[in-house]
Image (cartoon, rainbow, N blue to C red):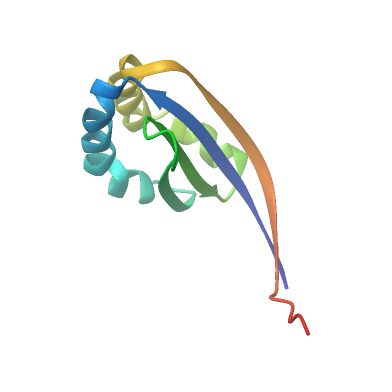
Length: 106
């Protein structure tokens, strides 16, 4: 069986003094984002060697679901608070994932 998801990866580099503010903002809103229609998964990753760099890694049912989120009041509210915290512009990728059943390796 094959399942298709769209994955959104966003790389964010924060000013060192803003990391705690971002983490608090993310923790306050992660449940709301995870419950948004079309979101199947959301996690926050942190670079091991550069602790001011974070990635959001999210699974979406469709590109339209992501667009609906990006046009929502929830996103606009979060983004308006997050954007001033950056040390450099964020980078984002939308990729398709094909998840195939586990294959046993002999």
